[in-house]
Length: 534
Image (cartoon, rainbow, N blue to C red; front, side, top):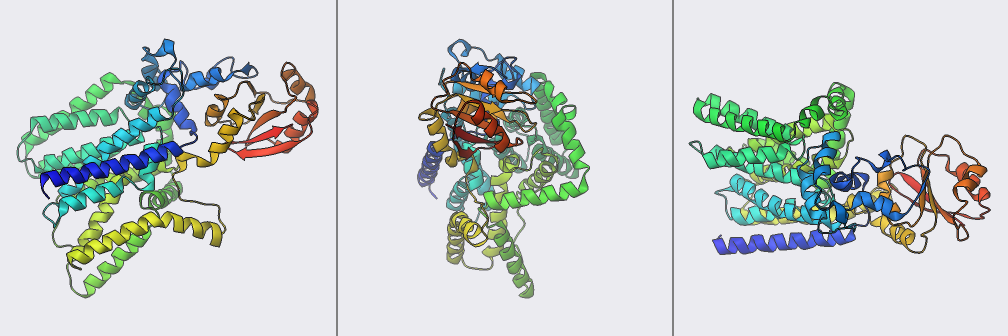
C-alpha cells in the first residue's frame, strides 16, 4: 500500500471511529459511582462527599452535591486534591491529572464530555498503536497494511472498547499504556543493538503505566521476564543490563513521584484483598470463568466460543489431512500472548469485583491474538480471496450478534439480559430529566444499610433544588414530620430508598406522616429505588 493511501485509510478509520464514539457520548445519560469518584477525586477536599460532617440529616441544595462533580472558579488553579486524594485512595494519580485538566474547561458546570473527550483522544492513539502492532504480526503477508488497519479499527469498535471509551475512568489510558508498551517491546525485539531512544521510550511508557493503574504491572512483569530470559539465553548481557537498568530507573522514578503506591499495593485493603483472593482456589476458578464469559460477551460481541469451536474443527481437519497447522512461527505473537494471559489470570483472581472494566485494557490485544491465530489457521487452508470473504463474514456476524443474542435471551429464554454498552445508561435518561424538571420536589434518601452507594445517585441530587439524606437506626411519623416541617409538600415528595430497606413499610410511614395519599414507583437505579408520593 502506498504511503498516501495508507494515511488516507487510517484517517478515514479514525474519523469513523470518532464519530461513533461521539454518537455514543451523546447517548450517555448517567454515570456510575466510580465515574463520580473520578470527578470528585480530582478536585474535592474529601475522597467521598459522605465524609462531610454536615452530609446526613440536613437539607441541601443542588450546589452542595454539584461541588463534588465540578471545578469551581476558586478551585481552578488548585491541583493539590489530585495528589492528596489518590494518596488516601487506592489508585495512582496520572489519569486524575488529565481529567482535572479537562474539567478545567467546564468551570462551575458538570459535563460528561470532560472524561469522554479524553477517552476519544486516547482511543485515536490506541487504534494507531494497535495498527502498528498488527503490522508487526502480519508483516510480509498479502495486503498486510490494509488488513492491519481494518483489524485495528474493529478491535476499537467492539462493545468492550465502546464501554471503555465511554467510561470516565482510567481504563482507556491503561489500555493505551499497554498498547504502547507492547509495540515498543516488539521494536526492541527487532533491535540488534541497544537503542537508547527506544529504551528511554520504554522507560517512559512503563512510568506512565505504573502511574495510571497497578494492574498494568502484571502485563509489564511478564514482558520483563520474557526479555530477561531472551537476553540471558542469547548471552546478550550488555543489552540485558541496559534493559534492566531502564526498568529499575523507571520504577524508582515512579516511587519518587508517588511513594504511596507501595502502601496501596502491599498494605492497603485492595492489596490485602487481592492476596487473600489468590489463595481461594474454588473462587479463583469461578472468577476465571466469569471473566472468560465477559471476554466473550464484550470483547468479541458473543462469538468467541464460536470462533474457538471453528478453530478446533480446522485443527482436527488439518491433522487428518496432514496439513501443517501454521506455516511458520511468528516471533512476535508470544510477546502479546503470555503478558495478556498473565494479566487476565491475575486480574481474574485479584480484582475486588468481577466486572468487565478490569480486563478492558487487554481486550483489544486479546482480540488481535485470536484473530491472528484464526488467520494463521486459514492462510494455508483457503485462498486469499476466500480468506477475505471469510473474515468479512465473521465481522458482520460479530457486529450483528449482540442484537441476535438479546432477542434470543429476552424472547426465547425469557431472561432480562442484554449485551450492550452498559455505561451509557440510556434507561436513566427519562428519570434524570423528570427529577430535574417536572418532579423537582423535596427529596429524601433513606440511607441506613451498608449497601448505601450515594455516589451512584449524586448526579440526580446535583439537579434537585432541595434534598435530605436521612440517617438513623429507627424513625416514626413524628421524625418525618420534623424533617419536612419547613418544606412545601403540597405537590408531593420524592423518596429514594436504599436496596436493603423494607420499602413498603417505610413508604407507608412517610405517606401517613405527611398526609399524602398515593405512592408511585418511578424507577430502579444502580443501587436504590425511587418513589413519588403525592
